[in-house]
Image 1: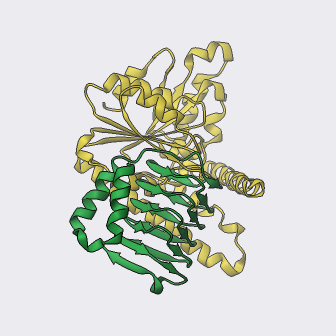
Image 2: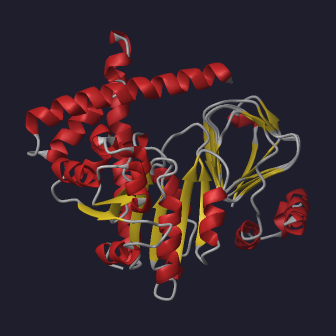
Amino acid sequence: MKEELKAIERILVDIKSISKEELNNMLKSLFTKISNHIDNYIGDYPTFIEPVYLEGNVEIGDDVLLGPNVYIGANVKIGDYVELSNTIIFDDVILGNNLKLENCIIAPNSHLNFENFKCNSTILSGKADSEKNLTKLSF
Amino acid sequence: MIDKHIIFFGWRIIIFTLKFIYSTYQFELIMPNNNEEEISRIKELESINLSSDEIRDSVVYTKKQVEKENELLASKINLDLKNNQIKSFDIVGAIGAGKTEIISQIVDKVQKKYRTLVICGDITTRVDADRIEAHNAETVQINTGRECALNAYHIHQIIKNKDLQNYDLLFIENVGNLICPSDFILGTDKRIVVVSTTEGEWVIEKHPMLFKMSDIAVINKIDLKERLGTDIEKMIADAKKLNPKIEVVTTSAKTGTNIEKLISIMGL
């Protein structure tokens, strides 16, 4: 799993180096390797549909649904009413309340400091207080 | 966190009490006619009378929409499963009734005939999934956290990510209780409700909704009936009175008694 994650992280630096089809295939391959690791979070009993892998120091808000096929990196803060499926969140990310992300990749150090946002098959990056200020690349 | 749990369980107790009072009232009034209509009316009463007049209309509207969405999703799940020739069962029952052991026994006996996927619902842990996996079935665990039942969205999230051509049989083991699972259908062919002799002979009449909504009732742990003095005949009669169409089978998952009979009733 770690090798696939590193490969995807490298691609984020130069996204044009890979086709959408190749990226989707990389994600599918990664999802088959995600194991369940959910015992180490900070927060209040979210719903998990396995497999979900949480790195250290992940903070989860109320009424959150994670999975299936979700990887969450270290030092990530997830707001209330967030739903993630088939999604990769890299380290040091902040997600606001009521975000629904499906088949998405959130780049390291991204801050989605806003609420009420739904997104599908997109790479999201940047530090933004509104959806409009976020860098988005659909795939 | 403690306050939230108190509020959460407080709500469930209120809802359960309302459900029980109303379902008993309804049962006396109109059973055995119009069973489906009755179930729908009982469900509509839940929680709406807790909303203030200002928000009552939007609460009613939202509740109806959510129920409709769950039913639509359940229909889609059932269609997807049927299109892939997958037989499907939703197993409900209280914690400790024997759901996991019954599924394990069935999976063990049919593994040469069916490629089985088992979805296990629990508030936390994957203890049940691990027990079933030991009998050569693929499992997926859903930890519902603070939710006391699986819903069609949970199931759809799993099956849309699976190649359904790899399976012939699906079991969904719902979160252990006899109350909340009546709120949501999951799109399976049949629902099986499991109770046990250790729960006492009043357990069925105290939980009418799930028996009205189920196709098969399993009364488990009959190996303990002599020691406990549980009136099994009353339990069978109660199930039949609530739902004349329900098939009732008495089992002991521990000794294997009548598991073959249950498999036969399930059409496997």
